[in-house]
Length: 396
Ligand code: GAF
Image (cartoon, rainbow, N blue to C red; front, side):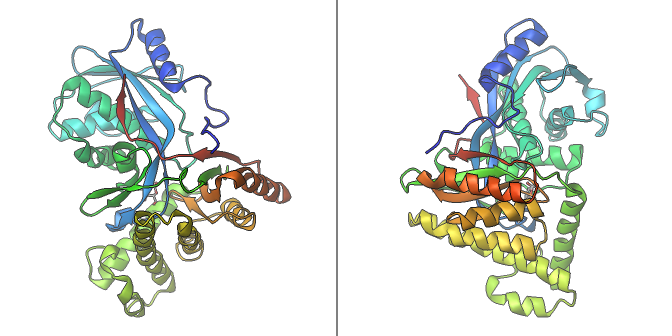
């Protein structure tokens, strides 16, 4: 298959080298180490995580690298290749969510969440470089959180095993940055394994690494950046989450995960609002599609997951109403050009589409999407072919 490349617009050169160079240029000495965490694509299971349900993301080889070294006292200094200015904060600023804003809030949020959980966080200097595009729905924020967390845990010798790290990174995102997201993205950035998708039960946080061997099946996953601007994504995300919580309470269950798909019709009959009914139908059927996808992958029947991906997209479009015209166009064009399945990946209202394709057909599908965009005067989409990569790690 086609090798994965950095997206257009990304800084050139190896991201790990860029982080080290940025550290040296900013602080006048080499870093003590470098820690990397990936962006993610979600194969299937959208808006199920905060309903205590199931998700199946995999990590990308696009990643964020943090070069870091300790510094005395409770002080943190952060540099990013995206900004000329360093951001510096001490314990006082960090202990009051809202004092550190912008991209540095993801770093301060991790320091804050660690301190709140009782960890003695080492002061540190950090320099960040990233190949994960920002605002494309590939979870650049979780990649920063996971890489910073890995760095601070190592530098401070903190007793925080990988399986406990996603909740802490999620807390940084929810309570410090202020985005009411679920646990999927942080879990993917931290716990994914190369060559596998991460089957995660978002209630228990139990994981199973499911072999996702695209090469062996002669397949590829094409990730197409719709380039659609995120339209009111934050408010819409929060309102979907609130609707799901309301539905669970109307149905008298802790979360929509507790509505078995066999009882769906009976549950829907108890709800009198059509919009709420459609939201519930998406979540309950999406959980089942994750389980069905996992069964097929366990049986090595990768080609056969295509219709489940496409059904997931239809459910997001019609029932959860989180897609936009650019996204639907990309999915339709990919399918018309022979993709085995295609769906939006991530929170929605823009972002990326993933298409499962025969490896030797990837370029044809990508070209078909580009043509469909041109016909509708949408901006030219970009695409990469991806392979399942490992989660957060310390680099040699
Ligand atoms: C975003 C959120 F961050 C995730 O927690 C998840 O809810 C996803 O949207 C939708 O599946 O990526």
